[in-house]
Structure formats: C-alpha cells, structure tokens
Length: 281
Image 1 (cartoon, helix red, strand yellow):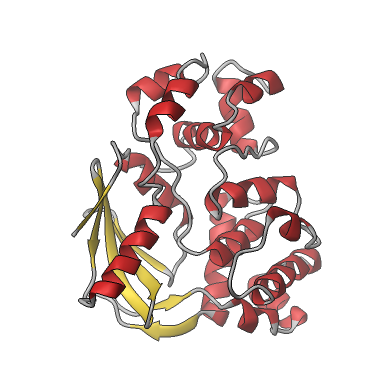
Image 2 (spheres, helix red, strand yellow; image 1 turned 90 degrees about the horizontal axis):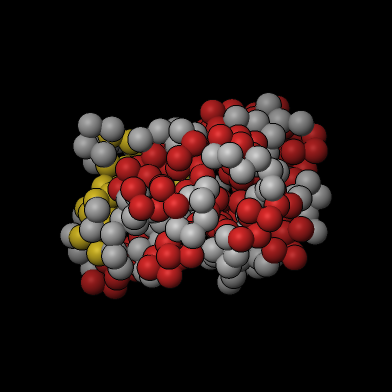
C-alpha cells in the first residue's frame, strides 16, 4: 500500500538518511530495490514492515492484515517521514535565503526523516556524540547485539527491536561500557537516558527533562528535537557537518544567516545535511 505524502517527497534524501543511520540487526537495507525492512511496534507487538520511499509517499509492505494494525503502522510511517507537513510555506521562506535558494528550487519535497521511536532516536544520537556516523552506527549495532529485544522473522531474515528503556536502565554500567566500547561518561548518559524514558512510560521527555541528564547538551537536544520530536525550528549549530556545509555555501558561521531561517531552522538543517554528502543517496 502507498502511504501518501502531502505534496512531493524527495525520495533520494529520505533514502540517504535511512542509509546513513542504519543499524545492523535493527534494519535491513536493499539498495537495489531502495527498500528498508525492520520491525515496528504495533498495537499487539512487533510487526515486520518493508518501506520504499517514492516521490508521492512511502510504499508500505507488511504481512499484517488487521485494519487497526495497518492504521497504526501508517500513522508511524507518516510521522517518521514527515509526510503530513505542508512544505509550501517552509520552502517559500527558505528560498529567500541565498544559501538555500538554489537547493530549494532544485529539490522540492525535502522533508525531515525522523526515527520511528523517540527512545531509539535519543540513545542513537547520544552514541553519535563527537564521533563519525560510522562510529555511531557501530556503537548502535553493538548495543542491539547485546540488548536488542527478541528476534522476529521478516522477509529478509530475523531482526530485533531496539532495547526497551526499563530493560536498558537496569544494565550494569561496567558491563555496558565493555560491551559497547564507550567511555564511562557516555555510558552514564545512555543509562541516564534509559532511566528517564522508563520513568515516563506514556510520553517522551521534554527538552528540559532531557537536558537534566548528565552528558546531554545543546547539540544532542537540537538533534533530538529534529529527529525524535517535531520541533520545526531546532538547529544544532555546533554540528561539524552543518558548519562545513555553511562554509561551502559561502555563509561561514554567520549566526545572522541561521536566524534568518526562523521559524523553520530544522528544515534548513536537513537541507544542509542532505546537500553536504553526509547522507549517501
């Protein structure tokens, strides 16, 4: 089935973001088909899904047949790929920026590709602090191998779900540090994040609550606001890729340029990431 998009979708950008953040054992990418397979949590438990970005939306394939399950999966996909956003006013605003005007004209439909689960998003963002995307993915893969939840059959073989907050929060710090190869401080941040989410089973934490976790600073909060939340105006100004992209565009690190993108700085960040080559197509 097709989960339609409100307006166009830059399928290349969506695929590039998926490819840049895939975690071994959690996701399976088929580059030839342009498809990602993973488990999503439905109303009755894990459900295998295969997703293919298209210019008009996301193709969703799943063995699930229950209408309530299908409705829930479609809602998750719409949020994951930002399919309900009205990009017309966003792109109209960003097109007035000399830094972004050419890309907005050339690539309409460039949306935010989030994570399907806020806890997964924040933990993986923490694991990616001050390291390359490849190193962050390696830490994530080690975490999944050590503490992933269950194993379920999918069309591409068995995959696991991301650890649940309560289970991860109970892991011994020394054990987790050795399993993942983390520093003590990063281990403390991962476990603190897990404990926070475990204490809030019915909602995701606010930025203020996340900021109280030792080791979570402005970069992590901004990235989480973009890829775990729904803030249209977050901007991780210290991000190395964004800094290089702005320099390449001739804007240097001028804060006035970033301010001119309000109230859509999250979409400006996504455009800079997509145009930087950091996300493979």
